[in-house]
Every structure is written in structure tokens, then in C-alpha cells.
Length: 302
Ligand code: ADP
Image 1 (cartoon, rainbow, N blue to C red):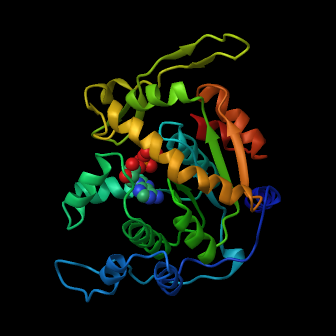
Image 2 (image 1 turned 135 degrees about the vertical axis):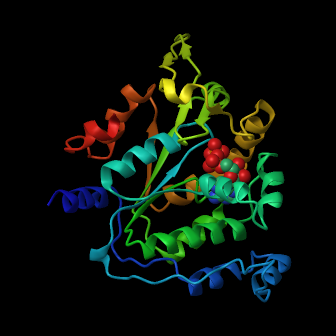
């Protein structure tokens, strides 16, 4: 069966078999490890009230390994294209794309109790606290479980060693794909990013065409332009300004690069250097993942 073959191929790339969803018990146990500040612990213990909901909610446990699809993680600097490639792979493999940045932005636009606090953090390019991110993620997984979702590709999580340790403790991640792109392109790509305010589609107006010099290869990445019906509705993320992107790149180096080492040392990391734009990179990524003979690859790439 195609799905099973895909899963087995994916598993050959690293891998492990037992399975459990994150459980409330596991999350609580980890969140109350020594690394947790007293303030955060007090917040988590706080009695629920209408204005201040508890940070961690219960969600179900499912242990049968036969019931699950791939559990992959995408790592990489801001602007590298994690969202683009991970959501394409999700369409191909039939798994949900769970981007913690999207969960944060949903919370921001909800004008819920956390939104003001989150706006301040995100607009400075800082990371949201592990507690808040874990809560948003566990709510998303719980909602997915209720809809019968199985497996996932995580995009933007884990971003700190503590997040990686908690994830490792509560479930099996099969494969971690580390997307890499030369640094001078990352800033340009972030600044060129546009979102359609109506359909949520992601586009990029940056036209990257760097000639090779001194033995270093050039790189060409065509803009990813919107269709005419989106063109007048484009918006820019509030954290995609030059100063904030530079801060996010700095924080990535400091906080998230150790996460690469965490997975490298466990034999789970697949390094992938993007050779150019989507037409060039997508087939090579499929090849690296042994998915290049997949029937649906053309439609997913469309
Ligand atoms: P990018 O990868 O381009 O920096 P994201 O859309 O993944 O952007 O995230 C946007 C913002 O959301 C981050 O700058 C950070 O403030 C917050 N965020 C997302 N994921 C996490 C995470 N795992 N831990 C902490 N903060 C996060």
C-alpha cells in the first residue's frame, strides 16, 4: 500500500516506532522540571477562572503505532521556506501542517487574554514562552485528535532545547528536516513575504538573482507572485521589518541552532541545502526524502 510504503521509507531515514500523543501528564511532568521558573509554575497551577484560563489542557492518548502517519519536524531560519515546503509535503502525505507561528498569529488576532502580551513579544522578534507555545500546540493537537487527524509535520516547533526535550519525552519524532539557505538571501526573502488578507495565501515579491563569484555558486529564486484576485489584498506580517527580522535571525542562532545539534546527535536530522527556488528545490527535496516517485507529487507541487 502506497501510504504504508511511504511511511516505511520515511522510517528508514532515521527512525523509531512506538507512539504516544503528548499527554497532559507528560507535559505537566516536563513543564515542572527544574528548568521551569517559579512564576511559570505558579501560572500553570493557577485555578481556572473566566479571565485566566489554565495554560495546559487535557487531551487524549492514542498509542497504537498502526494508527499513525509520519511525525516530522521542519527546522530552519526565518525566511528559509519552512512553511512553503512543509505544507507541500503535508498535502502529499495527507498529514496536518502545524505551524506554531500560525497558532501564535491566530491567538494574536483573536483578541483573547494572551493577545496583547503576544503582540509585544512577536513584534520585537522575541520567542514566546515555552509554556504559552506548549499550550497552543496541545490545544491544536487536541482539536486535531477530535477530528481524527493522524501524524503531523511541525513547522517552527521545537525552537528551544527545552521544547525539543519535552517533545522527545512525550512522542516519537521520525525525522527532522533542516532547511538551509545562504544568509544574505534570508533577509531579502523575509522582507519580500506577502500574505493575502482574504485567502491567507503566502507569496513573495523578492526577486533573488545572485551571481556566483570566487568559486561560490550563484542562486536564483523567482518571485512567487499572487494571482490577480489576491494582488490588491496583500499584507506584510508586522514582524517582517528589517530590524525585527535581524533580531529573529540572531535569536535563531542563539536558541534554535542547539536544537539542530539535539536532533543531529540522535541521528534524526536530515540537512537540506536549498539549491534555489521552488521549481529547483522541490524535486530535490522529494528525492532526499525518497518520495520522488510519489504519484501525487505533481499535484502537490502545483
Ligand atoms: P519565522 O520562522 O519566520 O520567524 P514563525 O511564523 O514561525 O516565523 O513565528 C513567528 C513568531 O511566533 C516568532 O518570531 C515567535 O515570536 C513566535 N513563535 C513561533 N513558534 C515559536 C516557538 N516554537 N517558540 C517560541 N516562539 C514561537
